[in-house]
Length: 239
Ligand SMILES: [Zn+2]
Image 1 (cartoon, protein in one colour):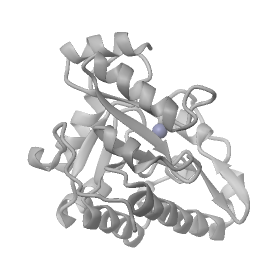
Image 2 (cartoon, protein in one colour):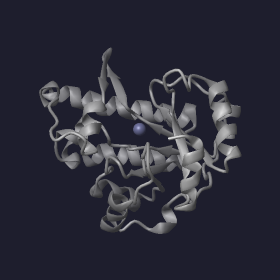
Image 3 (tube, protein in one colour):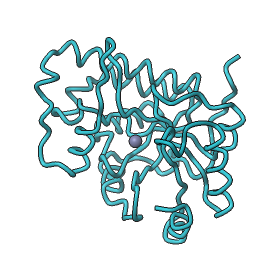
Image 4 (cartoon, rainbow, N blue to C red):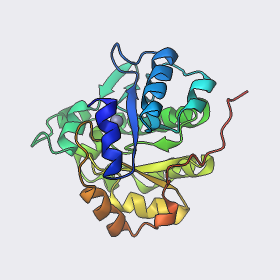
């Protein structure tokens, strides 16, 4: 979808745009991002970026300041030198594939523990060094595709992740495409005092936020805990 077409759907429902960074040969560095900010701003869009945590190159602080918001999300994680990609799990969670057939790869329970620990490290880096405002699809990974997320992401791990976001005033995204995080996670996050945001994660047409509305309703999330188009996080480049 072009930025011009994206700008038209703002009339249907207010939203911003958050392209992936990096993205192939189109979004490789600061200059590409600055051009994108200019192009999207000129169309009246609120401009964000979905920063690929753990793999994206650093952005200049001035580039980050030019964005209305910065989302950080994981799409793969490196554990002991081996990259674990989330594509198949993501397609399954989105309902694009009927089954998830990578389960045998995660038979080793210690691998799951290391994936969880590595996730926390990468998110921490995103919060402290990159300066993200929003943690995108926090629990989208092979773990969410393997079974009950409340088992694969133990409550104690969830609390560590939530507290990390909460202490830095980083919002936790409810993701329409993947339907994450799950209800108990959201209830826990609200109890601890977290902020939330809504991500359609649509790459194409603007669709209703049915899944998101059901998630908000089921977890009883308060409207005043959601970001409303303004940056709330006070962040400066780590000295
Ligand atoms: Zn993503």
